[in-house]
Length: 321
Image (cartoon, rainbow, N blue to C red; front, side):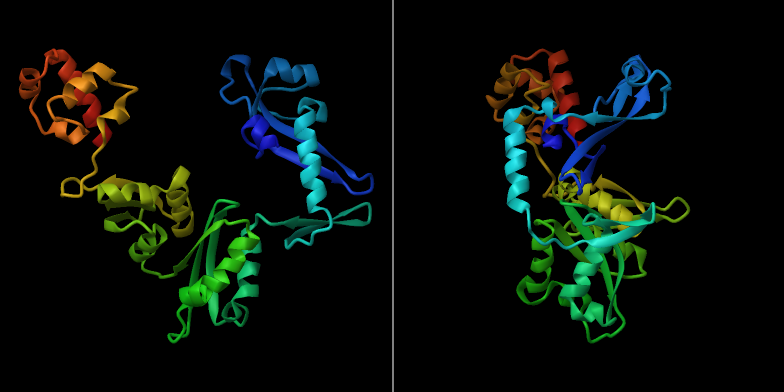
Protein backbone atom coordinates (compact mmCIF):
# COMPACT_ATOMS: atom_id res chain seq x y z
CA UNK A 1 0.00 0.00 0.00
CA UNK A 2 2.88 2.36 0.84
CA UNK A 3 4.75 1.54 -2.37
CA UNK A 4 1.63 2.20 -4.43
CA UNK A 5 1.01 5.58 -2.79
CA UNK A 6 4.58 6.89 -2.48
CA UNK A 7 6.44 4.95 -5.18
CA UNK A 8 8.66 3.12 -2.67
CA UNK A 9 8.33 1.65 0.82
CA UNK A 10 12.06 1.45 1.58
CA UNK A 11 12.21 4.49 3.89
CA UNK A 12 9.26 3.55 6.09
CA UNK A 13 9.22 1.84 9.49
CA UNK A 14 6.17 -0.15 10.54
CA UNK A 15 5.86 -0.68 14.28
CA UNK A 16 3.50 -3.46 15.33
CA UNK A 17 1.91 -2.99 18.76
CA UNK A 18 1.16 -6.58 19.74
CA UNK A 19 -0.47 -5.65 23.06
CA UNK A 20 -2.87 -3.14 21.48
CA UNK A 21 -3.40 -5.13 18.29
CA UNK A 22 -2.59 -2.22 15.94
CA UNK A 23 0.42 -0.72 14.21
CA UNK A 24 2.03 2.60 13.34
CA UNK A 25 3.67 3.76 10.10
CA UNK A 26 6.62 6.18 10.26
CA UNK A 27 8.26 7.83 7.24
CA UNK A 28 11.98 8.68 7.36
CA UNK A 29 13.29 11.58 5.24
CA UNK A 30 16.51 13.60 5.13
CA UNK A 31 16.28 17.39 5.53
CA UNK A 32 17.54 19.39 2.51
CA UNK A 33 17.47 23.06 1.55
CA UNK A 34 14.17 24.09 -0.05
CA UNK A 35 15.79 24.64 -3.47
CA UNK A 36 17.82 21.39 -3.30
CA UNK A 37 14.87 18.97 -3.18
CA UNK A 38 15.39 16.23 -5.80
CA UNK A 39 13.50 13.26 -4.33
CA UNK A 40 10.34 14.04 -2.32
CA UNK A 41 10.07 10.37 -1.28
CA UNK A 42 13.34 10.33 0.71
CA UNK A 43 13.91 14.09 1.24
CA UNK A 44 11.99 16.85 3.03
CA UNK A 45 12.46 20.62 2.51
CA UNK A 46 13.86 22.50 5.51
CA UNK A 47 10.78 24.77 5.71
CA UNK A 48 8.46 21.75 5.94
CA UNK A 49 10.69 20.01 8.51
CA UNK A 50 10.62 23.09 10.76
CA UNK A 51 6.82 22.84 10.85
CA UNK A 52 7.27 19.47 12.58
CA UNK A 53 10.04 20.70 14.89
CA UNK A 54 11.80 24.07 14.69
CA UNK A 55 15.13 22.52 15.76
CA UNK A 56 15.64 20.46 12.58
CA UNK A 57 18.73 21.29 10.47
CA UNK A 58 19.88 20.30 6.97
CA UNK A 59 21.27 16.75 6.89
CA UNK A 60 19.23 15.47 9.84
CA UNK A 61 16.65 12.69 9.50
CA UNK A 62 12.99 13.46 10.10
CA UNK A 63 10.55 10.74 11.14
CA UNK A 64 6.89 11.64 10.90
CA UNK A 65 3.88 9.38 11.39
CA UNK A 66 1.75 8.50 8.38
CA UNK A 67 -1.93 8.60 9.32
CA UNK A 68 -4.42 6.13 7.90
CA UNK A 69 -6.67 9.04 6.96
CA UNK A 70 -4.11 9.85 4.22
CA UNK A 71 -4.94 6.66 2.31
CA UNK A 72 -8.66 6.73 1.71
CA UNK A 73 -11.40 4.24 2.47
CA UNK A 74 -10.80 1.81 -0.41
CA UNK A 75 -7.07 1.35 0.29
CA UNK A 76 -7.71 0.79 4.01
CA UNK A 77 -10.40 -1.81 3.34
CA UNK A 78 -8.07 -3.62 0.92
CA UNK A 79 -5.25 -3.58 3.51
CA UNK A 80 -7.59 -4.83 6.23
CA UNK A 81 -8.77 -7.68 4.00
CA UNK A 82 -5.20 -8.72 3.16
CA UNK A 83 -4.06 -8.62 6.78
CA UNK A 84 -7.07 -10.65 7.91
CA UNK A 85 -6.41 -13.31 5.21
CA UNK A 86 -2.81 -13.81 6.50
CA UNK A 87 -3.77 -13.91 10.15
CA UNK A 88 -2.93 -17.19 11.87
CA UNK A 89 -0.46 -18.31 9.19
CA UNK A 90 2.90 -19.70 10.25
CA UNK A 91 5.94 -18.03 8.66
CA UNK A 92 9.59 -18.91 8.38
CA UNK A 93 12.18 -16.31 9.37
CA UNK A 94 15.60 -16.07 11.01
CA UNK A 95 16.33 -14.43 14.35
CA UNK A 96 18.64 -11.54 13.45
CA UNK A 97 19.13 -10.21 16.99
CA UNK A 98 17.60 -10.08 20.44
CA UNK A 99 17.38 -6.75 22.27
CA UNK A 100 16.73 -6.36 25.98
CA UNK A 101 14.35 -3.48 26.77
CA UNK A 102 13.48 -3.01 30.44
CA UNK A 103 14.43 -6.64 31.10
CA UNK A 104 12.07 -7.77 28.33
CA UNK A 105 13.59 -9.55 25.32
CA UNK A 106 12.57 -8.20 21.91
CA UNK A 107 13.25 -10.71 19.14
CA UNK A 108 14.01 -9.22 15.70
CA UNK A 109 13.03 -11.56 12.84
CA UNK A 110 13.96 -11.23 9.16
CA UNK A 111 12.99 -12.78 5.84
CA UNK A 112 15.06 -10.34 3.78
CA UNK A 113 18.45 -11.19 5.26
CA UNK A 114 20.86 -13.36 3.19
CA UNK A 115 21.10 -15.53 6.32
CA UNK A 116 17.43 -16.49 5.86
CA UNK A 117 18.15 -17.76 2.34
CA UNK A 118 21.17 -19.66 3.67
CA UNK A 119 19.01 -21.41 6.28
CA UNK A 120 16.44 -22.33 3.61
CA UNK A 121 19.20 -24.00 1.59
CA UNK A 122 20.30 -25.92 4.70
CA UNK A 123 16.72 -27.19 5.14
CA UNK A 124 16.25 -28.19 1.50
CA UNK A 125 19.75 -29.49 0.65
CA UNK A 126 21.07 -32.22 3.00
CA UNK A 127 24.59 -31.90 1.56
CA UNK A 128 24.77 -28.31 2.84
CA UNK A 129 23.40 -29.25 6.24
CA UNK A 130 25.99 -32.08 6.48
CA UNK A 131 28.85 -29.78 5.43
CA UNK A 132 29.61 -31.56 2.12
CA UNK A 133 28.68 -28.37 0.24
CA UNK A 134 29.64 -24.91 1.48
CA UNK A 135 27.80 -21.69 0.72
CA UNK A 136 30.61 -19.23 0.01
CA UNK A 137 28.49 -16.08 -0.41
CA UNK A 138 24.91 -14.93 -0.88
CA UNK A 139 23.75 -11.59 -2.31
CA UNK A 140 20.12 -10.70 -2.90
CA UNK A 141 17.55 -8.03 -3.60
CA UNK A 142 14.66 -9.46 -1.55
CA UNK A 143 11.63 -10.37 -3.61
CA UNK A 144 13.47 -9.88 -6.90
CA UNK A 145 16.68 -11.87 -7.39
CA UNK A 146 19.46 -13.63 -5.51
CA UNK A 147 22.83 -15.15 -6.40
CA UNK A 148 24.31 -17.97 -4.33
CA UNK A 149 27.92 -19.16 -4.75
CA UNK A 150 28.45 -22.77 -3.61
CA UNK A 151 31.48 -25.06 -3.42
CA UNK A 152 32.07 -28.75 -2.77
CA UNK A 153 35.28 -30.25 -1.44
CA UNK A 154 34.21 -33.69 -2.69
CA UNK A 155 34.87 -34.05 -6.43
CA UNK A 156 32.05 -36.60 -6.69
CA UNK A 157 29.42 -33.99 -5.72
CA UNK A 158 28.15 -31.38 -8.17
CA UNK A 159 27.29 -28.48 -5.82
CA UNK A 160 24.99 -26.66 -8.25
CA UNK A 161 23.17 -29.84 -9.25
CA UNK A 162 22.70 -30.84 -5.61
CA UNK A 163 21.24 -27.42 -4.74
CA UNK A 164 18.88 -27.36 -7.70
CA UNK A 165 17.77 -30.98 -7.28
CA UNK A 166 16.16 -33.39 -9.73
CA UNK A 167 14.09 -31.30 -12.16
CA UNK A 168 14.51 -28.33 -9.82
CA UNK A 169 12.72 -30.04 -6.92
CA UNK A 170 14.94 -28.54 -4.20
CA UNK A 171 15.27 -25.01 -5.54
CA UNK A 172 11.52 -24.78 -6.28
CA UNK A 173 10.73 -25.19 -2.58
CA UNK A 174 12.99 -22.24 -1.74
CA UNK A 175 11.63 -20.10 -4.59
CA UNK A 176 8.04 -20.70 -3.42
CA UNK A 177 8.96 -19.75 0.15
CA UNK A 178 10.44 -16.48 -1.14
CA UNK A 179 7.35 -15.63 -3.24
CA UNK A 180 9.00 -16.49 -6.60
CA UNK A 181 12.29 -14.67 -6.03
CA UNK A 182 14.70 -15.65 -8.84
CA UNK A 183 17.69 -17.60 -7.50
CA UNK A 184 20.91 -18.17 -9.45
CA UNK A 185 23.12 -20.93 -8.00
CA UNK A 186 26.74 -20.52 -9.12
CA UNK A 187 29.73 -22.84 -8.78
CA UNK A 188 32.38 -20.92 -6.81
CA UNK A 189 35.95 -20.74 -8.10
CA UNK A 190 39.06 -18.83 -7.04
CA UNK A 191 39.67 -18.05 -10.74
CA UNK A 192 38.26 -14.50 -10.78
CA UNK A 193 37.70 -14.35 -14.52
CA UNK A 194 35.74 -17.59 -14.53
CA UNK A 195 33.81 -16.59 -11.40
CA UNK A 196 32.73 -13.28 -12.98
CA UNK A 197 31.73 -15.16 -16.11
CA UNK A 198 29.55 -17.52 -14.09
CA UNK A 199 28.12 -14.70 -11.98
CA UNK A 200 26.85 -12.87 -15.11
CA UNK A 201 24.95 -15.94 -16.33
CA UNK A 202 22.86 -16.30 -18.49
CA UNK A 203 24.89 -13.81 -20.59
CA UNK A 204 27.74 -15.31 -22.62
CA UNK A 205 30.91 -13.25 -22.30
CA UNK A 206 33.33 -12.83 -25.22
CA UNK A 207 36.31 -11.52 -23.22
CA UNK A 208 37.20 -10.09 -19.79
CA UNK A 209 39.84 -7.58 -18.75
CA UNK A 210 40.57 -7.33 -15.01
CA UNK A 211 42.19 -4.36 -13.27
CA UNK A 212 43.23 -5.83 -9.91
CA UNK A 213 44.45 -2.53 -8.41
CA UNK A 214 41.00 -0.93 -8.62
CA UNK A 215 38.98 -4.18 -8.54
CA UNK A 216 37.36 -3.39 -11.88
CA UNK A 217 36.30 -5.79 -14.61
CA UNK A 218 35.71 -4.78 -18.23
CA UNK A 219 33.34 -7.23 -19.87
CA UNK A 220 32.96 -7.49 -23.65
CA UNK A 221 29.88 -9.17 -25.11
CA UNK A 222 28.03 -9.49 -28.39
CA UNK A 223 25.36 -6.77 -28.64
CA UNK A 224 22.48 -9.21 -28.21
CA UNK A 225 23.98 -10.43 -24.91
CA UNK A 226 24.28 -6.98 -23.28
CA UNK A 227 20.69 -6.82 -21.99
CA UNK A 228 21.04 -10.33 -20.50
CA UNK A 229 24.20 -9.31 -18.62
CA UNK A 230 22.61 -6.15 -17.22
CA UNK A 231 19.28 -7.82 -16.39
CA UNK A 232 15.92 -6.32 -15.57
CA UNK A 233 16.41 -3.03 -13.74
CA UNK A 234 20.19 -3.66 -13.72
CA UNK A 235 19.78 -6.39 -11.08
CA UNK A 236 21.93 -9.06 -12.74
CA UNK A 237 25.04 -6.90 -13.08
CA UNK A 238 24.50 -5.31 -9.65
CA UNK A 239 24.33 -8.68 -7.87
CA UNK A 240 27.22 -10.08 -9.93
CA UNK A 241 29.36 -7.13 -8.78
CA UNK A 242 28.42 -7.71 -5.15
CA UNK A 243 29.07 -11.45 -5.41
CA UNK A 244 32.49 -11.19 -7.07
CA UNK A 245 33.72 -8.00 -5.38
CA UNK A 246 34.49 -6.38 -8.74
CA UNK A 247 32.98 -3.25 -10.25
CA UNK A 248 31.75 -4.57 -13.59
CA UNK A 249 31.58 -2.43 -16.74
CA UNK A 250 29.84 -3.89 -19.78
CA UNK A 251 30.93 -3.09 -23.36
CA UNK A 252 29.52 -4.15 -26.70
CA UNK A 253 31.92 -5.99 -28.96
CA UNK A 254 31.90 -4.16 -32.31
CA UNK A 255 31.25 -5.88 -35.63
CA UNK A 256 29.88 -9.30 -36.40
CA UNK A 257 26.75 -10.55 -38.13
CA UNK A 258 24.81 -10.74 -34.90
CA UNK A 259 25.23 -7.01 -34.28
CA UNK A 260 22.24 -5.42 -32.62
CA UNK A 261 19.85 -3.33 -34.70
CA UNK A 262 16.92 -1.11 -33.76
CA UNK A 263 13.75 -0.29 -35.70
CA UNK A 264 13.39 3.36 -36.65
CA UNK A 265 10.01 3.53 -34.84
CA UNK A 266 11.95 3.22 -31.57
CA UNK A 267 13.36 6.73 -32.20
CA UNK A 268 9.91 8.37 -32.35
CA UNK A 269 10.75 10.60 -29.37
CA UNK A 270 13.84 12.05 -31.07
CA UNK A 271 13.05 11.92 -34.80
CA UNK A 272 9.85 13.30 -36.30
CA UNK A 273 7.44 10.76 -37.83
CA UNK A 274 7.54 12.28 -41.33
CA UNK A 275 11.34 11.92 -41.41
CA UNK A 276 11.08 8.26 -40.38
CA UNK A 277 8.50 7.69 -43.14
CA UNK A 278 10.80 9.35 -45.67
CA UNK A 279 13.64 6.97 -44.74
CA UNK A 280 11.36 3.93 -44.79
CA UNK A 281 10.25 4.93 -48.31
CA UNK A 282 13.80 4.24 -49.57
CA UNK A 283 13.95 0.87 -47.79
CA UNK A 284 15.67 2.04 -44.56
CA UNK A 285 13.52 0.72 -41.70
CA UNK A 286 16.27 0.12 -39.12
CA UNK A 287 19.04 2.26 -37.62
CA UNK A 288 21.88 0.29 -39.22
CA UNK A 289 20.26 0.33 -42.67
CA UNK A 290 20.43 4.15 -42.48
CA UNK A 291 23.99 4.23 -41.11
CA UNK A 292 25.17 1.90 -43.89
CA UNK A 293 24.48 4.69 -46.41
CA UNK A 294 26.58 7.83 -46.75
CA UNK A 295 25.09 11.25 -45.97
CA UNK A 296 25.32 12.25 -49.62
CA UNK A 297 23.43 9.08 -50.67
CA UNK A 298 20.71 9.76 -48.12
CA UNK A 299 20.31 13.36 -49.34
CA UNK A 300 20.10 12.22 -52.99
CA UNK A 301 17.59 9.44 -52.35
CA UNK A 302 15.28 11.37 -50.02
CA UNK A 303 13.73 14.84 -49.92
CA UNK A 304 15.59 15.60 -46.67
CA UNK A 305 17.96 18.51 -46.16
CA UNK A 306 21.63 17.66 -45.51
CA UNK A 307 21.45 19.26 -42.05
CA UNK A 308 18.44 17.08 -41.17
CA UNK A 309 20.20 13.94 -42.41
CA UNK A 310 23.31 14.72 -40.30
CA UNK A 311 21.15 15.23 -37.22
CA UNK A 312 19.38 11.90 -37.79
CA UNK A 313 22.68 10.07 -38.32
CA UNK A 314 24.09 11.50 -35.06
CA UNK A 315 21.01 10.32 -33.14
CA UNK A 316 21.28 6.81 -34.61
CA UNK A 317 25.05 6.59 -34.01
CA UNK A 318 24.57 7.50 -30.33
CA UNK A 319 22.40 4.39 -29.90
CA UNK A 320 25.36 2.11 -30.62
CA UNK A 321 28.13 4.04 -28.85
